Length: 217
Ligand code: GTP
Ligand code: MG
Image 1 (tube, rainbow, N blue to C red):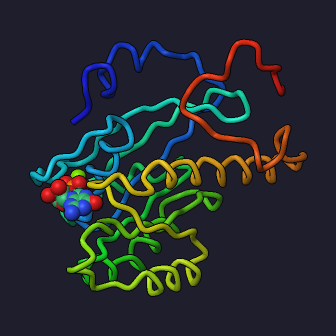
Image 2 (image 1 turned 135 degrees about the horizontal axis):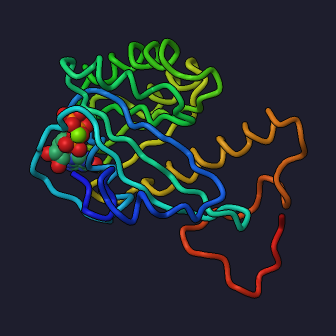
């Protein structure tokens, strides 16, 4: 799946140690909800309507900047098919954040959310942060799951909630930004220190801070 520079075998990825933090993130949910499409949209800004079901697991990396720190995101895209479950759950450990995805046009994928949440609870760290994403919100005419239903379930599970579209590039970047933000907040909480310099309102970008910008370390 990943390009030469971005796959686990990629030279640049292996050699690039130039970051302040590394966050391991996982995208999970039923097959065909759009996990791979969501990652491709975020990392490469591409989308294809062809469905090539993921085999096992793969990842892409993307570096973002928060509070003038380089945060390297290692984003794992898991196969939704049941037969890969043993492989994929082995990667939950050590993940700091999850994007749990369903498809707003698929009741089955929504009904499976509770099971996916249980998997997170079983296999991941207690402090892992989760965002529930209802993908394919561009398909309004085929919608089966109302946004309120998604929000209600997210509230019940203690997760944040977004509706998004990998196809139309709706709320994709925002989901990742929010996930990084809540991981950072959780980190500063568990370090029992003040919030990062500048507090929660500091901007999160995917471009390097200008050279003249004063370091907030
Ligand atoms: P597995 O790898 O089997 O777990 O599936 P997946 O969740 O990775 O699904 P994938 O990203 O391969 O997408 C499945 C199908 O849904 C493909 O045909 C995509 O083009 C389509 N798709 C993904 N996201 C969207 C979206 O936001 N809107 C629409 N309309 N189609 C989408
Ligand atoms: Mg996939």
